[in-house]
Amino acid sequence: MIVVALDAAERAWMEWAVVELPAGPRAGGAAGPASDLEARVPALLTDGAAGDAGALVVVTGPGSLTGIRITVAAALGAGMARGIPVHGVGALEVAAFAAPGGDVVAVRPAGRGGLWVGRYRHGEQSLDELEPPVRVDEATWRPAAGVTVGRIPPWPAGGSPAPGATPRPLAAAARFAVTRLPLDLERFDPATGRVIESRL
Image (tube, rainbow, N blue to C red; front, side, top):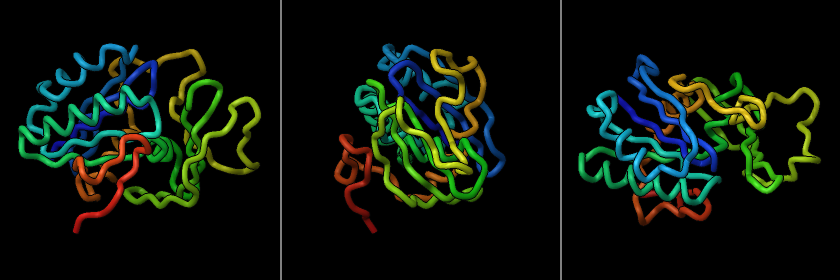
């Protein structure tokens, strides 16, 4: 099965990955700025590599409300049109997959001098939240000694992703996300990026 994953939780850039299950990533990339998402996202969802997708995965936050709303809306629309499921994955869950397995502190920019930080335990295709995401001050926050940190973006501050490079953490998170129930408008709260209730 082909899975297309979109991450537009950052203000300055977005990532995408095409993952073949169970084989692994087969395409992907990153681009910025995120200001032209309304044109870029539909094009990604109809790209040749993504055209035969059996599922879509979209990052649900926390992060840029504009980027998240655009990608969630585009993915839900494309999923409805194609009759394929759309799954959600948290922004910090993607960051957790940037680190080796085990206990990890996941970190992503929160803007205005802040960071989103959460603690997870993950295996190859499993992830458990140990501490929910919180916003901290970037200038004063430091991870505890000996703690493994998964960070998105992994490049230096002020840098940018390499064009055409497949984002491995997003691809790994997509493999995990498709094991969950799909998103739908009644169960998803875009303000928090969390599922409101489970539908059995």
